[in-house]
Amino acid sequence: MPVTYLTREGYDKLQEELEFLRTVKRREVAERLHEAMEGGELIEDAEYEAAKNEQAFVEGRIHELETILANARIIDPSLSRSEIVQVGAKVTIQEGSNEPETYIIVGPAEANPRMGRISNESPLGRALLDHRIGDEVRVDAPDGPFTVKILKVE
Image (cartoon, rainbow, N blue to C red; front, side, top):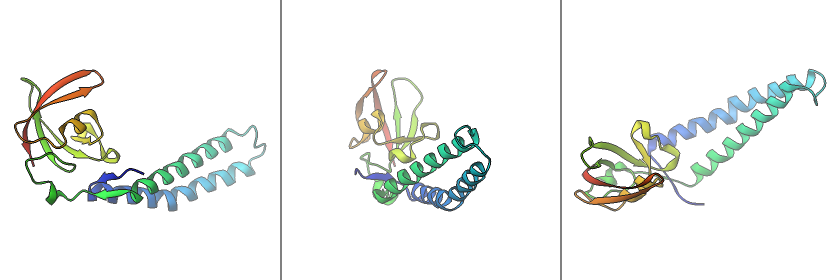
């Protein structure tokens, strides 16, 4: 299983979600299933079917979180302080004459471009890795290639 990069904050957030799903959500779903089973014809009972679907979703998410956390590598921000872009780095880039944009390179489990957090596995994140301030980097994106200049790495 590949390594999943997480910030300490991201790791703790996923840990909290896993604990909630294991304790609270599992119990809620089990109660819904029990009530639906007592409600009559199981084959025709939409509530029973919905509860079974929710149970499958919860168990799938628990498994996914367990896998992510078992393969997690915590990003140490103090190690990211260099001129070279690495996972955990805060990078300011500029495409042509557009306004500069700043992103933090994180693992896919924490990616949220609207919040300025891009995955190291995304086209932009992958292209920026191992480059330094002043480099012009070609990004092979689904909508076509473009070039950005790295202005700052923190």
